[in-house]
Length: 338
Ligand code: WQD
Image (tube, rainbow, N blue to C red; front, side, top):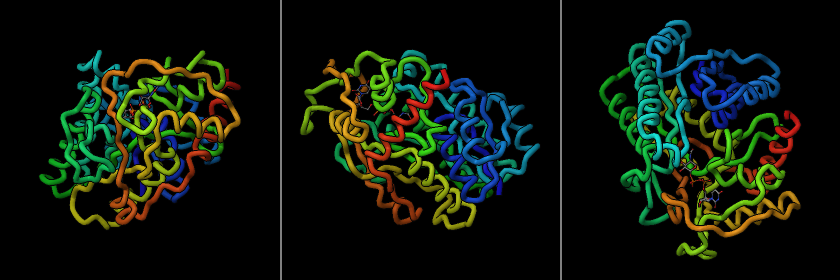
């Protein structure tokens, strides 16, 4: 069975490619490398000991997408190819709507023609500022707090409407919480371009000296230590959830044409707790200070992952210390690449 991984040269796509291949699936990566270089793709090939088929293309080009689906028999597609910086999406909404929506509509158009199953990389951001935590898949999707979050909600609807209308495709949306960490080999990991938006890469870059100091955005939230609470999910655990979802689709185990699963640990950590865990796991004292709140941040969100645990047979297994030790090993590795 062949699985197409769109955006497969990126952080999550590369880790999913490794787990899919090791689970016995044929994997085809397609990526336009607009948001990453070859580091992760080369790392995937090193880990797997072979050249993973790769097509350099833009999913916004409908002719290229059609040619790809005509050239390869694709049994399932996992769609990662999208822009994902929350702040940038507020400054550049049209760039985000055009790229993130056109690319997915092109894929859905070909999935309909070829009868291909679709796995969509959604995000906990669709829950907005949840009234209560942990959030389940039944928790309401609140108005998106950014164009990025809006594209996730809209793409979920594109998928659910498509699978309900066309009987030759099935779909699953996986709602990730906060993906962090790196592969234990330290050959693939998160490679943000420029100044990292996200906490985990900012921590490792501060620890290695690329950044002078980590700023903790806000210490006056209504949480135990005043900093925001999140559900940090290890990237390898997250990747394994995709294998379980692909297996469920391709082995006809789905209970309806469209399913949604929260992919999180079910445990909330504050910003300060993550910093402390990083320092403990790696024996490093991090240079940080409190700073004003960041616009758009939700106070707290963490998953109830019991549906994924039960239906996908998947559960987060890696400890936060393992995750942060792998993130640190990766940061040290990319420093050797210059
Ligand atoms: C986590 C916490 C920050 C940086 C976003 C998207 C989500 C997904 C992951 C794409 C917050 C604090 C951060 C820093 C800080 N995106 N922080 N100093 O905002 O929960 O989720 O990224 O896949 O869809 O919404 O993640 O890592 O940016 O922030 O204090 O330098 O860390 O305020 O409380 P977030 P994050």
